Amino acid sequence: MQGNALVTFDGVIKRFGSFVAVQKLDLEIHKGEFLAIMGSSGCGKTTTLRMLAGLEAPCEGEIRLGGNPINDLPTWKRDTPMVWQSLALFPFLNVIENVEFALKMRGIGATERRKRAGNWLERMQISEFAERAISQLSGGQRQRVALARSLVVEPEILLLDEPLSALDAHLKVRMQSVLQNLQRELGITFVYVTHSQSEAFAMADRVVIMSKGVVEQVGSAQEIYRAPRTRFVAEFLGSSNIFSGTVMPTGILDTVTGQHRLPHDGSGSGPKSPATLVVLDTRSYLSAVEPGPEFDWVRAKVVGEEFTGAMAKIYLETADGSELRVQSGYDELADMTLETGQELFVYWRPEDGHVLPKA
Figure 1: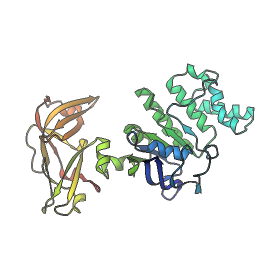
Figure 2: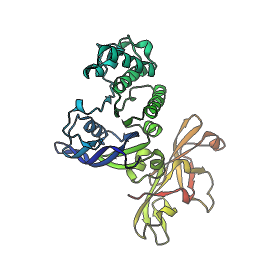
Figure 3: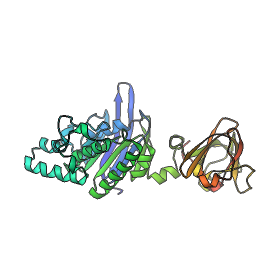
Figure 4: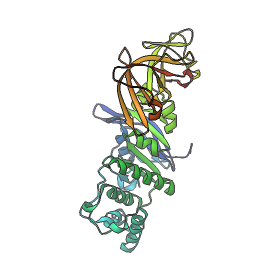
């Protein structure tokens, strides 16, 4: 997809008074990809989406769609429909009338728009509800109506602003599958804003992580999960144990929790330079006895545990108050007695660590 940009943000800045919501955004969105933009509240993700939709205007920089500048193009001329968090369905129209609405605004005749709307209701498996009032639908059914209403105009790009946030957990998983299959089948570019890591990682080809208006990292879910670029990303994902310190002349990282060997990707860190080592919680292990010399380890006390089916996540705390996590199969921990306050060794293979390019 590289070099096949449908959307380009070129040095885009958005301010609200003295507050900078988006800081010099340079980003390409490729034609036909599923891109997720994620981050905590106030990070700039929704403002970025609204600028693309034409609901907010950049203060500086340029947004291009298909190579053409759209900064001054009104919303209704952009062909960038949006599925809102609230869905924004019209309560005074029934299901098929909601889906027809955008076609009616484009001057499509009654017979043609009824046919096209009906096709999309069938595609979304909600044909039986065509004449039903919006208030009579479940959350998942309303979600499908909102999608049909946006896709009936056959856009080149679809914007989605946390569309699954109001759904129950089991419905979210089902709708994730619907969205992913739709995007692949249609080949439409999806730009999906969410605060949910599980949603973004499950569906997107690439993920953009933002913080305080700045893009911290862009990459596939696997790239970001395995090799975060900044401490913020590592902490935001919550899936790594983080050790910061100073590199010694021997290439060892000296931290408050002990001295740890750096992996090969950390060999460029010079002596006396600060460095941050991260180790995935799935590559961290527990032991009641001191591990062998092939491992690095720290002592920590158990402060809590979380069981999710076949997996368990154990939370621990070091003497200096640092939090550690170990995620393991429930069966692997079955022979180990875990009690709050119990001191254990958290250990890992040095080659499983990753040194952050940016502290």
